[in-house]
Length: 319
Image (cartoon, rainbow, N blue to C red; front, side, top):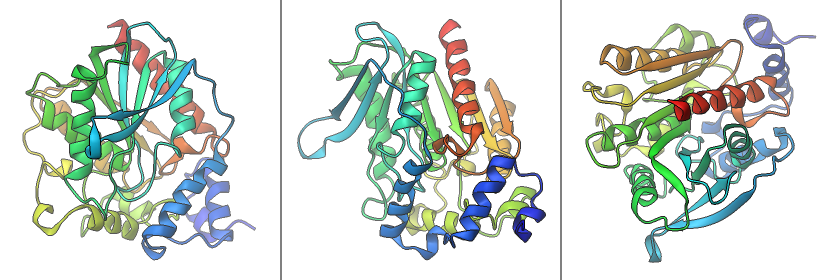
């Protein structure tokens, strides 16, 4: 028998409906009810919903920087020895969970389909390392690719930032931080980004989908609470949705999930970028739920998203 929640949200893609029904049947708790350690374990478990690992010509782990402050990263190079464009990827997980490892298969698939070199960053997590630690790490990766990554053979002039969920917030904030520097990215791909705490905001997507177990309002605010010190809660450098000066940003693609509480804020941010003169492409994956890119064995739209991103990167490379 179909659950009342599935009946209420009949806009869900059939794959997403089956996943939500499984979450309900298994009694999956929101992240804010799990605590930090169990939330991390739950997100790491997303690997069980992933398909076969794509083989990339060269995959290697590197350190960004030197000494005690070095940051781990993983490089996916589909064409060793060729100066390919490069994508710096920041994983999702609410600033608190997630890792290079849990996003490994998505990055492998995108590297193979796009032909771009991907550098996936193991940035520092909250609450141990709250803002601005993760953002500093992301900016440092971009500078490293430009100047210090002797082992990379890439075209840094065509460097694009990409992030999903909290990684989308980091990509947006990093792009803004670097826009007037020699390290300004050539583009950004924001995948169902969380751009601010929800708080008292109520958009149609928050009202309709804020209770789905894939991501709840309370979980979003719990993640942001761990990431943002009180002194930074109203800082536009930390909270992209608070930015008022969006001029001078590079071509941007914003992807949102149709049945995600974050859908409307992603589209709102895209509209504000467009109004500020940025070239913006938006794509809504109707019926998709938050985080779907990491679950390609369960959700066919994950594979569609990889193909869409690869096509976007092919277009950028050709331009």
